[in-house]
Image (cartoon, rainbow, N blue to C red; front, side, top):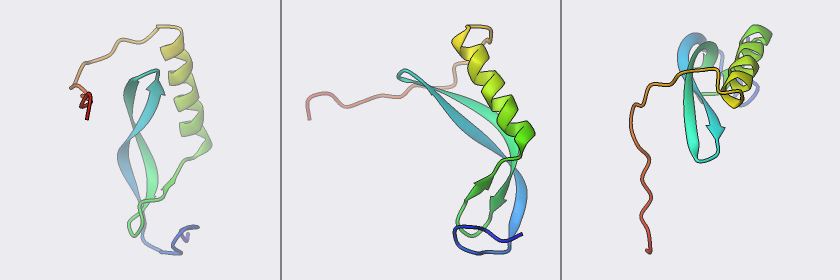
Amino acid sequence: MRCVICEGREIEEKEVEEEIKIGNDIVLVPVKVKVCMSCGERYYDIETMRMLEEVEDKIEKKQLRFELIGKVLKVAGV
């Protein structure tokens, strides 16, 4: 397999955190995907895409619990 972005050949399966934005919040979802080790392009299979869609649907329906892992802060008035 070659990367469609950089044409690199070094593509490995890695566990990454996909970000789902909900309003001003970001939900991190761990998934295993193929990643180009040259440019970082990610390749998602259909099962992973369906799982992410299901997670997003459950988030909207408030059917998931979350673990608070930090805060995002914004400088005001600069």
